[in-house]
Every structure is written in C-alpha cells, then in structure tokens.
Image (cartoon, rainbow, N blue to C red):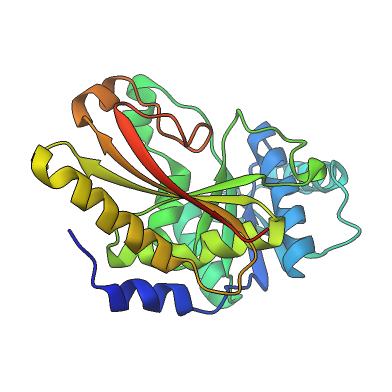
Length: 264
C-alpha cells in the first residue's frame, strides 16, 4: 500500500506531543518498579505531573491498610523529589477505572508494567495492560520484566524504533516516536516491512519508493540522528524466528536496504 505523499507530509508537520499529565498504573510489582522509573524520567523531561494509581477489588479495612502501606513503600523506592505527583487508590475493574481516570484528569500518557504470562494462563486471563491499551484514548507505554530498571538513571532511551505501514494508526504514532527521540537525544530508526510476495522485478523500485516515504516523514530543522530501513520479510520464517524488534532493529530475516541521514 502506497501512502499519498500529502499524508506523510502532514504527519511530519504535526507539532511535538507533550505529556502534561502521566498516569502510572501500579500493582507494586517488580515491573511496576521499572515503570515508576520511566515515569519519573519522562515527567522530568516533559515537566509532567504523575498520577500514581492502584486499583483493587477489595473493600475491607485490612485491604485498605495494606494498600496504603504498599503505596508508601512503592513511592519510597525511587526519587520523586524532582517531579510533581499525586496518588489515588481506587476500587473496581482495572481497565474501566483507568480509562475513567484518564478522561477525568486529562491524561496524555499511561504507563504500566507488564507481567510475563505463558500458555493457557495468557489465553484465559489475557493481558490487563492490553485491556487498558484498548480502553484509553491516549498512548500507553509498557515496561516488561526484562527491561533494565536502571536505564532511566543512565540517560534513558538511546534508540527509538518506529515501525510503520503508513496507515492512519501508525502515522498517528509517529509524532510520539519523534518527540521521544528528540527529548532523549536518541537515535531514531524508521522501519517498514515489505512482503516477499512483491514480484522480483518490482522489488527494487518498491524499496526506493518506500525509503522516500520514510525520508519525507523527517521534518526539516529537527536535529536528530536517524536511519530508514525498508525490509523484505518471509512472514512464515519470521514468525518461527522473530528477529526484527526494538532490541535489534537492524537484524533481518532476509535482507534490508537502509538510508541513513544525520544532522548531528
């Protein structure tokens, strides 16, 4: 699918998003500890206020006491002195509660830690964070169990990978990727995946066309280091051995052509 150039240009011209209000959903777990550190790092860079939220189904006095103590210990585990924050302890089902709070408080970004679930547990229970993602109207940043919890203290994000198929949904995410790369001084890699079903005689021309689309997305006057990757992927082999991911954006299942541009 070729995206009209005016749509790509419009995405590049969008103003940089700001995160005035960040909602941090926590269950006080280890992954929530990681999410807390990223929330602090982002709030510090964007001058945001953090709304720290814990949702419980319990209503007894003992549950409230335990939750209050857990919240205090959770907040004491990180340096919140340089950011503004507020805590809320709510009752109910997590996704609708978070969605309601996001609307009520004008939340620009939700942050939550994800837990590793495998097999039947994931199929039966699903992902609470995925339900939050589908319930709220703002972006959601998730931190998994393998994320380095000290990375925010080490300077935060070093590389941002933006994957796009040029449809309206992925283009909507573009200003956020660009903003994060700018505020962190991170390298930005733009990735578009092409199917190998494209006839061989059309592959080179298609790659060039999509690389040009990616280059058009980078607005002038933005001092960031960037790379454009147009990549052919055998869907079946990559499904069996996925290698293209944020941890290793330059890996490929078959081949890739790149265009590198840097203004610093």
